Length: 425
Image (cartoon, rainbow, N blue to C red; front, side, top):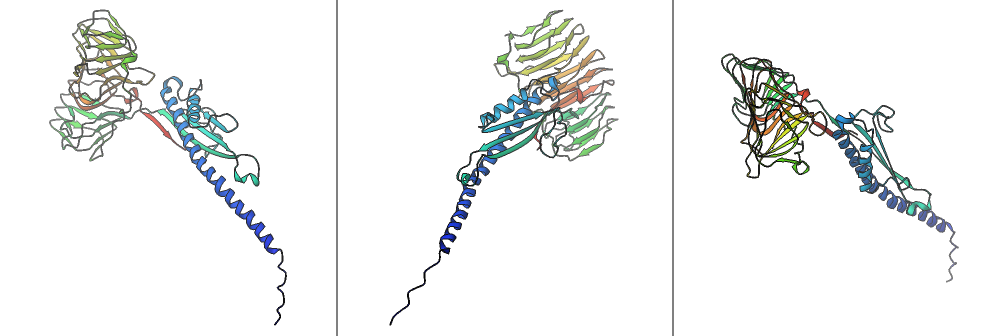
């Protein structure tokens, strides 16, 4: 039996194979180059975020010099340095880094074409990825972009008093007959049923009074604010304020420094503390006074003290002991905080670990202390007379306020301005 030979096969198979190979190569190109694009996209975006935050930090630090602008391109330099450290050197070929700050306009994003507010920065990073397998389909690099907007601003504080102790009775205690008026909020973190106490005819008037626990009044004591109890505790908004570094300061004294009449003090390290006892005409030059043990004491009706642009930092000595800060009885006292730099608005700053040393302020109409009093783990005691100005803001573990007549209102706008550094886009 004879069979017919099979018919010749057509060339369609070759065509199908060729087309399939092209499709397969396209898939491989997408998988390889596309995967690299996605990987680089994550890296570029992370680097844009980091660069924007670095610039925002710079804008924050120099806020009271430049008010959120960047006239010397210092914030821009911080962003470029951070981008370069992450592999994007702004060489104009492989990577391009663009930084825009106020008063220029946003280049991209939902606010494109509008003016960038002071304290904000826009960072755009473009990385030109070289083609790999996809070069068989096209030429030129594949641009990978990342964009971030961050802000670094100082906000005026709206809190006049923040008491941090979590469970003390009378964490905030008012006595005598002196009312305390606060142009802002009063916050008491204690969960005690008598966390805030007002006795005699004393009291507090503020924008609001938030208490984690509850309050108690007796006699004619009062809390004339909108009072909320059972409020969750508020964290210490000054916790990020850096501690001054004494190694960068001149050492003025290695033992207790007793000040003479008419003396002019310079900023620096005072080991053993400072004592002013019935000495008139004492002046403190602007700067940071690092008290290393021994504390700071001023007393005597003849003592007069003037210190503008001053911050006193109270730290333990080499023996681990910390002296009190006591400013009382002066014929004339004027203390104002720095008006620029890291410690803008901070007048008295006690080491956060110190629990035993307390801060005492007591004065009459000749007493003029502005700025923030900060003692996160310690007690602050204030006694005010008619017309006395006894700081702008208190942040402390506990606080006692007494007096026989009204003293000037607390105005937190004159105190420390909290930092606000974050990504916004």
